[in-house]
Image (cartoon, rainbow, N blue to C red; front, side, top):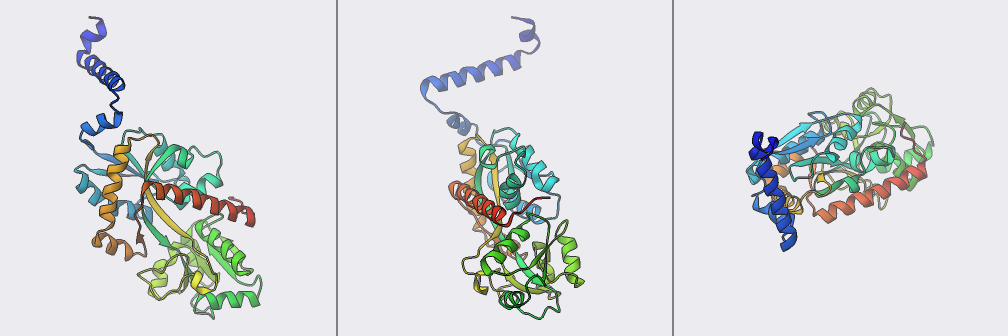
Length: 335
């Protein structure tokens, strides 16, 4: 027995047993997933990275699922907020975490589709470095107008804008943001000329809309002000929103075929055990059917949306292609 074995006999033996077990599995055709299942997954807490600070929609949606998911699997789902660089820091860290079934991240349209286009040197490539589990929610972005804007809906605003090319200003959270991409799509599909005014986030844009310094705004930060009547809700970018059901969609406002929403989903690092992905995915489907969860999220304008792994994968592919087309046609730069 060598010095290492004498000093650390348990460590040496456990490693040797693991190697023997894996070798036996290889010879007998038993998969690592079978061995994983025998470990009664999950047997310890699961870490869930939220790549934004606490309090925002990403954090709200993640925690809304984390609590019932913890109860369902019998282990804590620990929310770990790691904000910075429009979510790229947290998602990049998640991509490098262990592929053992105990690490997850919540991704959205920005982190999964926009960031890789905006920054080709990003530390992660979404579908190379992650295995999608399921979408969990989506939100239509509300298009709002200042209180004294002489229109009551998007259809009327588009008619006004067509009669006054370049006169009206639309605020967004910045170049390449969801609001900016939505604006460029509307301009192209409706044939209108509206000036884009980029801000450093939705909050300052909302302040200027409330102050009458811009005419309209496309960003989720305006939802509560629109709901309260402080500003006008002109349309929503996807399906109608339960909290403001009277507000029409962009497609209903004369821009036929328009549909563009933010979405959220859970992912694990690539090569995570398929049984872990499947188990979490099944629990998400059950949680998404809860009326309590739906009421909680819909109060904030967010719709519950669960999917299969394949459906989530296709959504990421399809949306990335759509954004690429918008960026090229509108010559958008992310600076």
